[in-house]
Length: 208
Image (tube, rainbow, N blue to C red):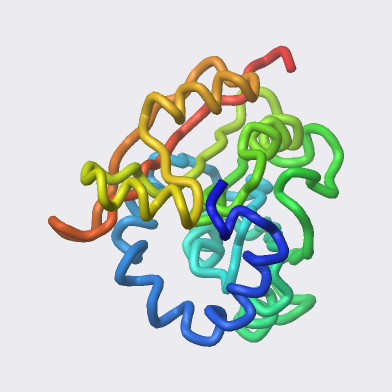
């Protein structure tokens, strides 16, 4: 387990990163990548969408271009403070502080589930994916973006020491273990030589 897959360490990390997050983030996960993923997400106006690991609200902004019923959840109070500054604490988005592995929502509460840049911090990603399946209605879409596993042996060792990086085979294992039957993975990259994202689009099965 990488050092940032510990929840307390991750919260401390984001206490400081939140100050510069919106400046740094576009070099790894930019608007073009987000908007491309939104075309795969395929949500309709009025769909209730949960944004897990919403951070400062970068993905939330994109989701609001497609539906006005967006809920955001993050474990970092500092990241949420930045999101409140953008959207208002009781504005257009329903923000909650919480844990991806224990979502504070009833079964089938959402039409779709989105999470970008969060899975790498989950100590138990299969548990969190099972929670995504639980709170999303049957037939709904679950989209998760995480860091693709590096090709270089040196970078693989570095990645493993920091947080969760994973390839398509590992994504297959995690989503299947969480109870998903239909899913596909797509690789995204800002530019050649920059970090790659692995984006998984899954459908919640009719029988949970």
